[in-house]
Length: 97
Image (cartoon, rainbow, N blue to C red; front, side, top):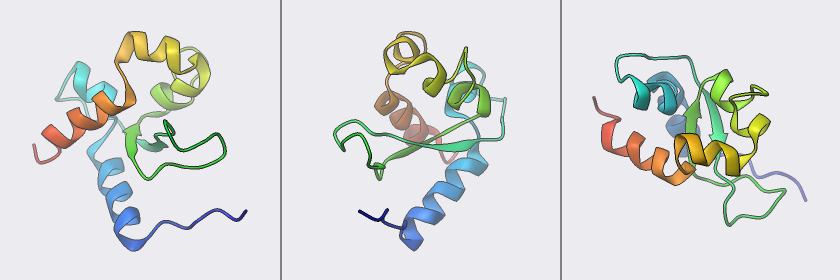
């Protein structure tokens, strides 16, 4: 099955999130704006599908082997930083700041 391309609204949302910076870094110190990549929240969408919900994460919190969600695994990462949906809510609550 071919991957569904993001809509224009989804692309604009992801771009805005990436410019806002890493949600984990900003939760730790709100004045720190770290360049971010987009992480697709996959809970409830199956293993090979990308969820429409996304959060901005810097390289370290996204892909790094020791600190990133894809390196540590979701369970270990959640114990330290909170759930992906909690971080999405933090972004939503603070995105206009």
